[in-house]
Length: 381
Image (tube, rainbow, N blue to C red; front, side):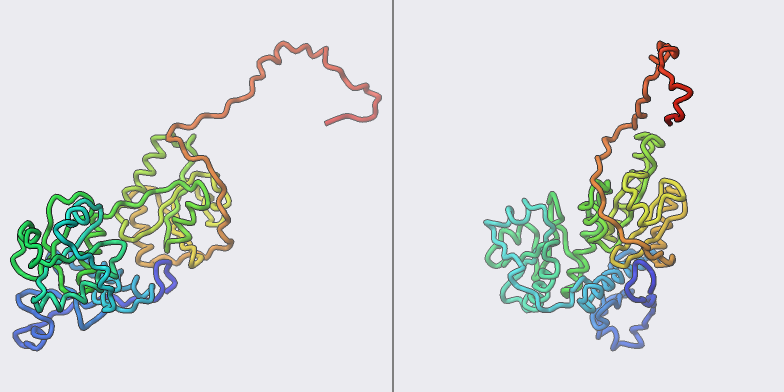
């Protein structure tokens, strides 16, 4: 695909229905226990993901698109198909990535941390717990650095099991990132892919929106654009044209859109007219006026220009086109140069430059100014 956001074409998804009364083998194969049950067949078709979202068209579409994005990112990273979560089908997890929790360290490790935790309460004699152990380890390895997984032997640390109302094994409890007032029940599947998919969905909901960074040097440009697949660069008008209020309105629009699309992990950056003129020349903006925004993919040497207004609705429509690959990107005709160091905006209105004061010329006697002799044969400019 020639789109800026695609490495290869992805087929659109299909929606089907199965009468399990007539095809009981399907119900048995996929563990159907109630009706209606919705399964999403993403990467690993033998291990579909249970759909647990709202029973609306919008809800089903949103979850299907999310899993398609996870699958695409896995393939980009060369991880192959998973069963619904990022590298979730990998069975070679490291058991050491699961933290063994005890009563003496539980509060410090889990409750006092800022990390998101999934904690399994198990019993050594429990067959289902033994079956879950390799899946848990695989999920812990896949989520390393993002979500922590822990395990509590409830037969040894019954105080913890009692505190969190554990009545059967295995039981998994969810502790959100940040302040942890109480645990929530984990209601996802029991494969590594299910656990990863469930955890990443929680991360997406509670993730911090991206910072809209001013392009003050090449290091910021590298972090936002060279190191990320796509970055959105906005070139705003000069502060003298908008004032602080106008510029802040533009930045507010970008912050709201950054929050809306935070799952995309795009870079977001801005500058103003003429401040990074060589960058403007490389991405071919400025001729149609300011403000303007482009989607840039340095790795593909491609750029998409937004031709509409700088309103939230207009830019949102542009970003939808970026995601869908409906606009053919332009190829950069010159390399993006190293950005120069700039002074950060102080948040204030601009000041007009002071003009030279020529009022003292009124006191000059022109008769006192020497004049070249007419016969000198030359004059000075």
